[in-house]
Length: 214
Ligand code: SF4
Ligand code: SF4
Image (cartoon, rainbow, N blue to C red; front, side):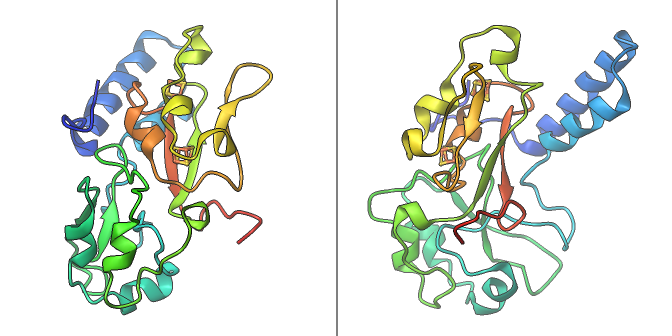
């Protein structure tokens, strides 16, 4: 299992592994349609930007995407300040996005550190200092078809690891994982620790998953 010291294999490698696995499963089980298989393979690549138009998970406190990229000075201060090395510079042919910071939670999640270090380090205002409850990196989404609980296993890694606790995630009356709004801030700790491949819980970029309070 992935740990903070031993992050999971790259999403791209997992994409191909999961895609092949899903396709073989589709052949073995004639009832599994492409409609079921392709979304699972697509999720294995979640968080890895391949086109300029794709959404990114930005650091906590980031301005809206439309202004973030033009405000960020590419100083790298937030990347250097993150105590768990969750932030990385984007390599892009699009000069508007190249060298801007982003997150891939399946490889390293934002742990919502006590200091909120990246926000304080940003010299440009692209990241603003907000209380941790007001952070909106994205929103967790549960894929129940992949969740171990759907197969009778008592897994609750995502629930127990969430730094925001029961305000953000819990179990519903049927024992299924339930992401709660507005508590979930999209930090990605749940995605990082989810043991399934592809992950049964993933972070959707903000504002693709708008919250009613912001
Ligand atoms: S549910 Fe997941 S993304 Fe949301 S706050 Fe908890 S760990 Fe972070
Ligand atoms: S960690 Fe993953 S498999 Fe386990 S309960 Fe959460 S979503 Fe399901």
